[in-house]
Image (cartoon, rainbow, N blue to C red; front, side, top):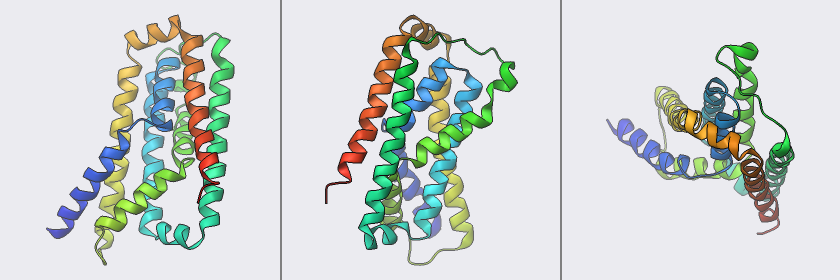
Length: 210
């Protein structure tokens, strides 16, 4: 019973952070409006997998390692920020390129594995998310817990992350948002690219702060 209460507390705390807008939200939304629902849902699953990776790292004591080696955390912020800047640059550069909407079942089911991997890499490129997971786990995890509890916790992390971004994928891949995207593609891509680049740049510059 105590483990169930702890699990519920961790899931509730993480859910608040998951729904806050960030690089993952921008990426899933853009894939949804610019490509297909299948790719967007695959990206959402990738976000869930990335969250589970952070959860596993937190269970293994990631927070202690990063606190013990500040230079490692700074390096992770720089690398993650540069990757987000790179994604933002690619989105911004494609603003003037025409887009062809992928029909259901077309283009090898819209290459869902590539979209899944994009979700994973986007999620894990933000080391601040790792700190959020580590902090929440440190605050709520008991001194000792069973293997079953750890497995259930990682499964819930995957479900929470995937469910939220799947909702984003479904909403933004509907006909209304897609029509709006096609009508204002250049402006939307520039805005999305600028936001992604700005988030990455902020992450890089924050690495220089103590």
